[in-house]
Length: 311
Image (cartoon, rainbow, N blue to C red; front, side, top):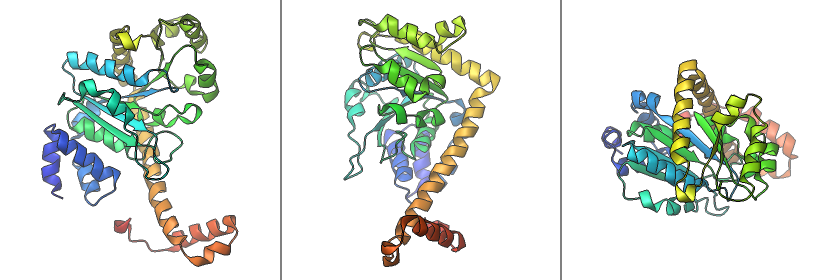
């Protein structure tokens, strides 16, 4: 593949170039490292990676579509990475979020990519961070990461996002589930969607108990009715406010450094796992106790001279 030409397409904002670049990295094909090394770093520095997470039924996809509408009216190019559940057989994604955001499908300045979780409990596939950087390099000012709603295991979003918004809705017991998950303590914004329904006010009050400062309660809890477009502009203003605040106090830069470390470990783990699975095909391990087999595999890998170009 002609990587310089692909980079030229990508930096020019061509949708086909962006899609091919993400596929190249996601499938770990030759040239992926060269492509990632050639991305426009200035654009990556300017991007805001916004995480949207929350239980099923909270209206994350509808909210995402409305946020994109607000951004496009401001002439801001947007990327969307919708993390979908994987098929346990094929490993593919359902692509449901792409279907629900068809109103933006013909807009050349809205880049939508559905990605499969591929069995990861955290709700993000290993290449989601790279996909966000590719979208940023294509000119996206905001990249929205929307994760599959799997409740208590859904913490990976915090590792990749500059800001995280937890979306809840009344009537599903979501407040209790979210408190169990512990994500309330790490979310930057709490969004009570479907705020026109019974129980929304109580949910807002419950969420407010997380913050000891009354000012935080007012700034960090937003009420929306995404299906009617209500409260979306206010939410977007809050998002940009906290982005600016985090850039000024260094919090955003610190989060990106932490994300870099964790993403590096993710890639390394994935590469090592593939190598170990290959070695497990040896008949010898069929009759060995699992812990002993694991020790032998790790020792063998440490002592092995690996041609990393083949990984």
